[in-house]
Image (cartoon, rainbow, N blue to C red; front, side):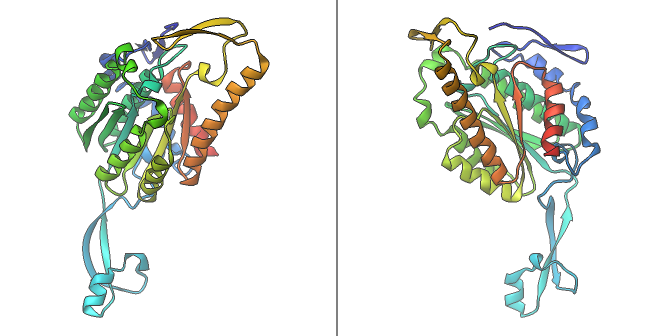
Length: 323
């Protein structure tokens, strides 16, 4: 893989096949570049991450009092009303801080890249950038890093320590992606690690949280879609789709030797029908992911390994908000 570096405000993101914890920490200084994105909170989905305006209530229960004309009927406390035979309503107070949970996929399918970085590295960098951004805005930050090997949780806290712990967990999982780990994995069609991660975030997330899911979504199965739908009912859900150019289209026509780490074979990319089929399979899979997020009215931001991270995040989030 060709390893060219990406520059961001005075420091480098080297990309490559594995993360560098120092670079993930340095992304704290790049987070300020996203400040301009919250200028239009009505169209920009990232405003849910940068400000306190998001679809969920974002409020905590305070008390119950007798219903008064003009109160929202959706807040009626039916148990107290039935017990007292007098309509009562719940009062809520706005949260000054709210949780931001970042899910980072570090599975085997992410261990791939043909340009500046592997998908797993880009996902880690994206998680770091958004985590630092949320912390700078005063939110509680936590998350889940997951792969075929399981998952690790970091409970949301408004502290640099919480972000650092999340980044170290992501870095540990990233370092575990190697040929030895790859050879131990079952067939991708039987894997449910994305659904498992979504099930776990449903367990730990408070209503009104912002949940960012960073993945290639290759294992977005029916169970994962159900969890996604349930999360979107009460939380602000944002998807970040990670891809590589070589997944979208085959390299220029020629005869290539390829390997999965065990066996070798040769492919001929000059056959036009094979090229079309390859590109169509990718588009079909991506269309399925787009449809899943559209169904729950959540934005899906698409980023690729061949472009600089910060400029992609800025551009893609803004474009997604204008659709």
